[in-house]
Amino acid sequence: AQSVTQLGSHVSVSEGALVLLRCNYSSSVPPYLFWYVQYPNQGLQLLLKYTSAATLVKGINGFEAEFKKSETSFHLTKPSAHMSDAAEYFCAVSTRYSSASKIIFGSGTRLSIRP
Amino acid sequence: ETGVTQSPTHLIKTRGQQVTLRCSSQSGHNTVSWYQQALGQGPQFIFQYYREEENGRGNFPPRFSGLQFPNYSSELNVNALELDDSALYLCASQPKGLAGEKMDEQFFGPGTRLTVL
Image (cartoon, rainbow over all chains, first blue to last red; front, top):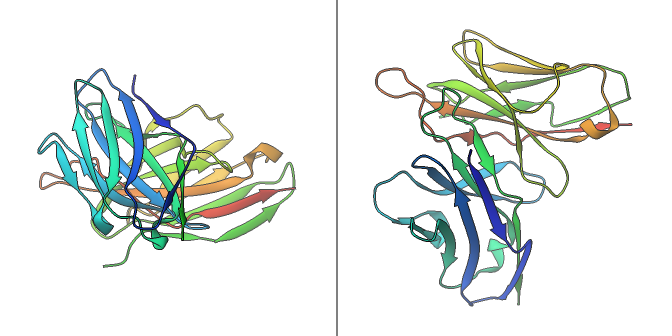
């Protein structure tokens, strides 16, 4: 069975500071991993995805994530936070071999940016 | 290219009523999944439709049902609404590969906010 754990339901950083959102996964088969962002009253937008190619994945809006199999982690980072980054972020895992490729989401991390 | 669209955007129902939510998948996508996102939580998988048949289901009771049409659009039906059904309902579509198989990446619509009173 697959699962995702996001450490920290709320993260607050100053504008211009490093953003680090933590995600650990559990999967019995090689996973596909995703980070999605959700702005207030909107749906989910894909930030980036890991599909067993390069372990360092670059996404939109300057975000990137590194897949570390030994640590079962897929943390999301951005070197310099911008006010527009304030949103809810979800880490997710997708099963690759099941007939229904459902996505299992973490509980989310709310990112706040201080001026 | 048009993305995933959902209708209506907001809906208010009372307990015991029935509701139908609609989703139009992105062009070229043959798989549609539905998720329920309660306030302050991550989305939970309801079920998936592939080539007009249910292709997997999460931990939701039978009063949650769906349909997929030949143009890959989809409906989510919920009968006998309960207060706990109040949530944002998200539809997501998946692209198909060169051989027509479904790919893993899912693209989400803006959701339908359902309030049950």
